[in-house]
Length: 197
Image (cartoon, rainbow, N blue to C red; front, side, top):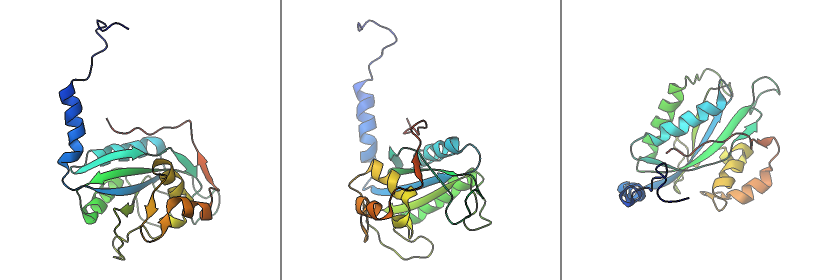
């Protein structure tokens, strides 16, 4: 292809530099892992909307998005609810955990999440799985997420995006996943979530 093709425009070096510098402008950012789930409405569209909303958050950059998995709902009779689509995203953020939690709840509310029954169906779940290596038993936001280490629908996609990941205080995701197994977590290779532009 010749360089005279008007449809092929090189990305200016200044733009590349600005994009690369965007991470640096987050002063002292922390890594966090966010679990996403949806079993009502257009599940894939909802998960993508949540990823885009996270990226639109000041002081937050989405760095990796896992493949999509389909799982049966947790804690209810088989067939009582639609199946979930689950994914995990890795983010870098300057927000403290409490602000990240508020943002997660705001995103859930934007997708009309209703919290009226435990283990109930939901349009969107946004869970902070880990925040850097913080360990906290604060009842408002327990870190790491108190059940993530025993849930294949979190561990499987997390292992996809960060095979060397560790759950603070509990060990390697790969080891935890080996104990829990992958049963009931179906890869959906026909579906894809995008990293925000």
